[in-house]
Length: 118
Image (cartoon, rainbow, N blue to C red):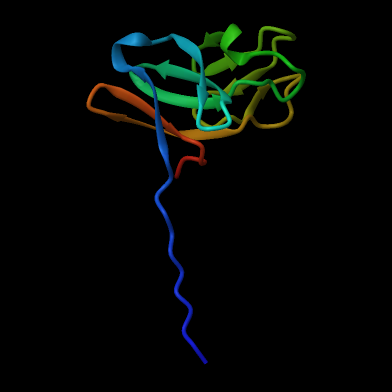
């Protein structure tokens, strides 16, 4: 019987913006990774968060929405998501938005297409 070895590889991070590109309370649309994943990058009080850009209620770009406190309101029907978790925060949204890991290295904002550790 042979022992099995499990190896884990670190997630790939992709540089999507510079720190000065997105001020507090602002967001922008970015495409991440080899398959150009649509992502809404948000600066919430100096911390960066990333949600899949497509509203889970209907096909609308969340980057076209509005930040209301710590929630992101969809531009189509006014449903909302918690920015930090992607969880539904206002009807008609009932399915969470996918979230991604964000980090800042030097002056680069980077996103990995993996769920952030909580």
